[in-house]
Image 1: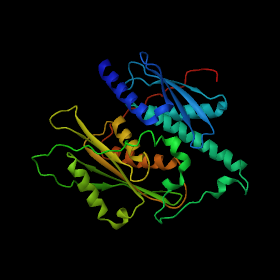
Image 2: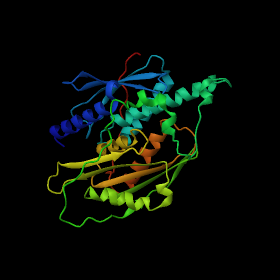
Image 3: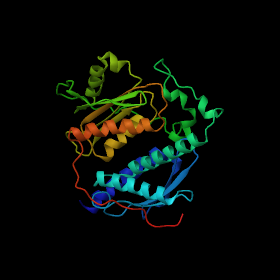
Image 4: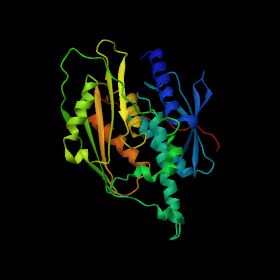
Length: 316
């Protein structure tokens, strides 16, 4: 791959990251492609500052370079976190991975906070009075007012959208839909669905077909994202996504499809809310369902194993 192609991929990733993380994304030096990302748990109790830079050969043949800054982080915790980031790189060699790294760090922070909360919680702790609801029309989304800053919802109300493709002279039919295995976490059930599409009109056909199932139609959320490449112009994409009440879940799925360069495909992830608050884990499950189907159906190229990167040494 040429340096120009790597540069184009970097520019696309930088633009996507800036849109997703808003004020938490800071340009340090645009010429050397060095950036800061502030990553915190959803309760804003802990934060890690990641400095990331893009070498010329990234993403195709080299990993991005990073430095983690968190004075409160224990040495073993930092070592384990760096190992997790290296694993992510090895599993996604040749792809843009900063988003995956950021969400892994956020997941680590959330798990760490939950462990400390459990250790400190007493019967009178206000955290224990959070009310959860079963499938009665009220979803987890309504119970997460404190998550608005974490998700930057108000700053990006238009993240999910639908791009309409020009009319096609060919007949547009509903494609075959493949269904993934269901996954259960704390009574919430997730299931992915995938179909090959070549026209935006097929998006509605796929959704209508899925909604013929009363079980899917009655689900709490049906999140989807799609990408279609123009037959006439290889650099023209039609893409879109829908949260269906799970704020930013659709845009996260679409970003996943962008960084793995999945084309001419729609992925739908259905969630049946089980009454237990999952926090950021729900986004991990939604993206995992999507990624597994994309991989199983050949939309992600296989990669050879390669040793992953480590954080540059810096005293925190």
